[in-house]
Image (tube, rainbow, N blue to C red; front, side, top):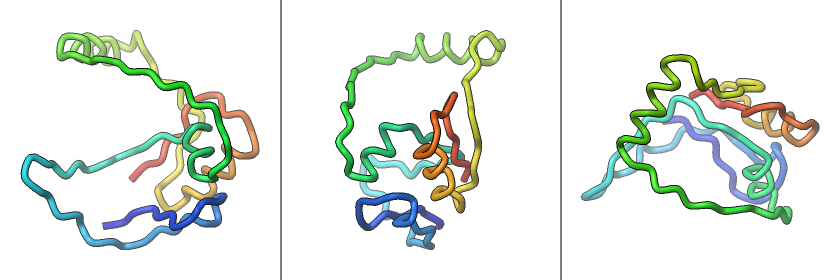
Length: 111
């Protein structure tokens, strides 16, 4: 399987797209196929090792809330704001974009 691997802190240049072994699945675990992932400034600061004030919050999602959110999305009443989309092989370019400008929405990585 393909994975974007980061062995050290740094900018987009430390990212490398590699073939890796599929992870072993243990008892009580599942393997999830990811189709897309988002990047934001908080992720960027974690990757680079730069100090960044992160505000954490905890949400308790329940089935009814998730079903309601699904209905809103399907009805077009809630729309995600996506600034740009990049394929997995272009994650370094996506990170450079986040580093050089203020994204006006999520930056999405497609897999």
